[in-house]
Amino acid sequence: MKSMKNMKVLIAGGAGFLGSHLCDKFFANGCDVFCIDNFYTGHKRNIVHLINYSSKQFSVINFDIVDPYPYYKDDIDLILNFACPASPIHYQKDPIKTMQISVIGTMNLLKLATDTDARFLQASTSEVYGDPTPHPQPESYWGNVNPIGIRSCYDEGKRAAESLCFDYHRTYGTDIRVVRIFNTYGPRMAIDDGRVVSNFIVQALLGEDITIYGDGSQTRSFCYCDDLIDGIYRIAVRETEEGKFLTGPFNLGNEQEFTILELAEEVLKLTNSKSKIVRKALPQDDPQLRKPDMTKTKNIFSFEAKTPLKEGLSKTIDYFKEVLHT
Image (cartoon, rainbow, N blue to C red; front, top):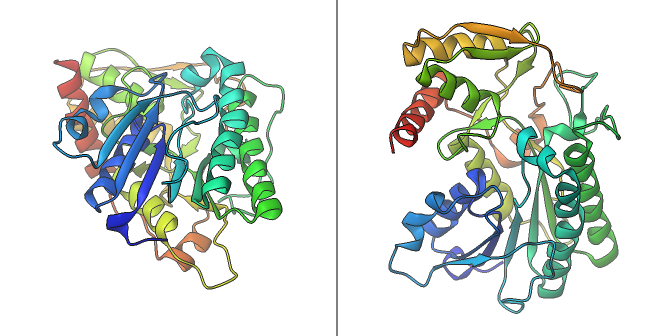
């Protein structure tokens, strides 16, 4: 690959939560960044600071990756595919569209990467493991996923996207990187995405009941967005020895594990909220355990999530305070 200052990076879903942070990261490192997004779940407020920056280094293209991508076919060095609704409320709103994005959209971008000899990084998810048996979950685990449930449009869509990545690698030699992202939180999360961190913070700030599904004993490993972006960057730009590929998949997240009840109690403390915790029935196919085995990613990329939960939650709470008062 070229030096960073000469690299042209296409970020699909670049106006979304993680995509916008990636735009910041590559922009700050001197890359020409092309943000493509149809704003289905992304938002211009996440990238307005880059749009207003007086530079040709950042471009926004309103585009749906389900359609073949017609631009910059000769000028791309790296493609990062983050173009998919990632919260249950959003991906279940139109499950057929979610599957199209994961399969047709990923295939379109893989074809573009192959045609332009660009490196391709696929944002996969810990949801490919379903409700897992091994704990923590290693990349070698094939998963326990309901293929016809209400979450399958996302879970199976991402599994199909991984399959496409490896088929393009085996068939055409496409330089792929697949990362399985575990629960991530931080500024620029959508206020209405239905994810547990944003739900709890918004409910606490508004004085509403904190909604826990089940008894709150289910676990998650929460990674602050800055840590995750650092990991993605390391994986995306790492060069390999001749004839070798760093295809992955690689788990990416925080090894520290918390129950949902512990998260709720921490949010209440940090917001000084008088909200009460109420319990509702668990949604279908909601996984009971979620924690990454980070051995592989640590060994190869020297990656480790460093932000304590309290610190990350405090920054996220400050963000939502600002959003709720604008």
